[in-house]
Image (cartoon, rainbow, N blue to C red):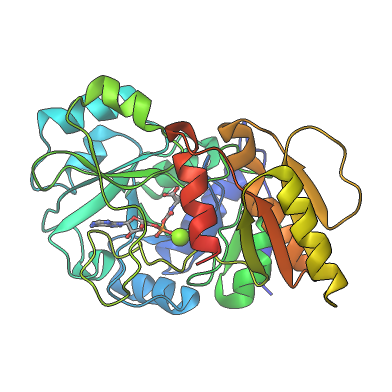
Length: 333
Ligand code: TXA
Ligand code: MG
């Protein structure tokens, strides 16, 4: 089993950070908390360490990784072209949950980008992530710290459950605040385009980018060329089968039908404030940020409780819920 080291999320202990930086420098893998989800970190400039990341996740080599940096200055060293829009966005949203896709410089190993001519970069705001990148003194490549196509981790225990000893060290900084991944924004091909909705909302982005576009939400055809290789329909999937049902009453009734049909281990995820009736029933906040914060942890908990089916009350159709709706659709895909 990997070493799991508790770390203060607000003011991380320097010995733990230096230790983790040493593991990265030696070619090892370190899972660390970010404000979105836990990342599986490797030194970006070390192709062998990058190969270990793909192996640990069971992820196809064509799926590019996000380079994590301390700031825009470090980001520039990875970009062949860093334009005025990138500057404006970095100033507005970094450090934070916005990932920018830009043309890559020769400093980025091809292995990190799945051979693509672009690189995805973000400066996380989590103090542990920032301290780790600073201690290493160079960018950290980090996908979410979970096996390919499974639920993202928002707690250290989720990382341990998913990756086990495929990771060398886990920094346990508690729960991730956003609980959903960063928004991925492509600046490399004309008008700025959101490839993955995430923790930064479209409304905020449009204030800086009036011509913002949105890539097709879910790519159903696994063989179609897709704008972002991470956009397969099946992704973020729990072990349980997920059914999304419109309306609270209909969701409750559907669950009862499934239980009556012989599947007692059927979970239920509702919107609202009422206290849950049992361990298989979860009630999540009816605001998108509160819901996102708990979503993956709830699905992990239902998997752990043995749920075979989970009925989820559909969330609102409006734009504020886009990222949550996207994750639910993929989890049920
Ligand atoms: O919040 C996050 O972004 C987390 C934390 C750890 O930072 N990381 C994360 O990484 O979610 P990952 O590898 O699970 O997802 C990266 C996403 C995928 O959808 C991938 O396709 C996209 O970013 N991506 C990465 N590089 C890209 C590129 N060059 N062009 C287009 N999309 C890219
Ligand atoms: Mg991921």
